[in-house]
Length: 242
Image 1 (tube, rainbow, N blue to C red):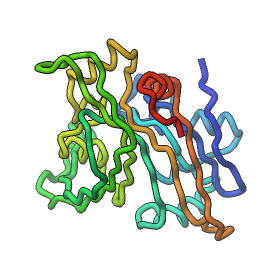
Image 2 (cartoon, rainbow, N blue to C red):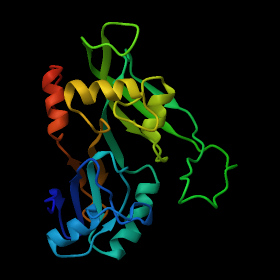
Image 3 (tube, rainbow, N blue to C red):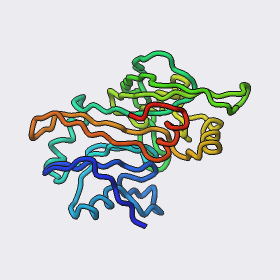
Image 4 (spheres, helix red, strand yellow):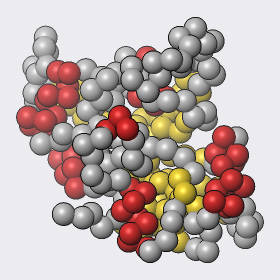
C-alpha cells in the first residue's frame, strides 16, 4: 500500500512535505527490511528526483524540505548548517514546565552501534542550544507510580543548533522527556499514552520552517499540521490546536 505524501509547498526549486511519523527519509542499510521512504515516495509522486536538505528522525513528523536539483541542494545545504533557517517544533513532555527558557547544554556525539562502529568516541561535546516555551498543561487521572495522577505539558521548541536527537536529549536533560521517546524517555509514561490514548509514536512534530528564499529573496514560512494521533490528544486535553 503506497502512502500519498502531503505536499506543503512547491516551486521551481523546492518541494516540502509533511513527513509521517515512523517513515525513514531515505534508504539505509541499517533498515534493510523497510520498503517505504519519503525520498522515493515523493520522487514517484511528483515524477522527478528530490534531494534532501535536512533530516528528521524516523519517529518525528512534520516539515521536510527537498531541493529539486543537485545544484540547488549544494547551494542551499550551507543555510541549514548555519543559523539562517528557523525551525519550530511541538512536543508533549512529562511533567509541568512553568516558564520559558533557553537550554545551552553541549551534547556528546551520539554514535550508532552499527553505522558508527569505527567512529571515535572521544570527540569533545558539541555546542547545543534550544529555546523552549510551555503552551499548555494537563493533569490526567492515570498513575505511573506514587501519585494517582500524571502531569504533561505541551511545549514549543526551537533548536538553535542541529545536533543528533538534540530536542529529545535536551528535554530528557531537563527531566521532562518527550512522551513516546523509547531511547531518552520514560517507559512508564510511554506505556500510559499507548494504553489510555492509543498514542504509539514519539510526540515530537516539526510544525514550521522559516527562511528567506535564496532565489526569490522573499520570506518563506512552511507549516505542517498535526496527524490524527496529535489531533485526538489536543482534543482530549482541551489544548489549543493552532
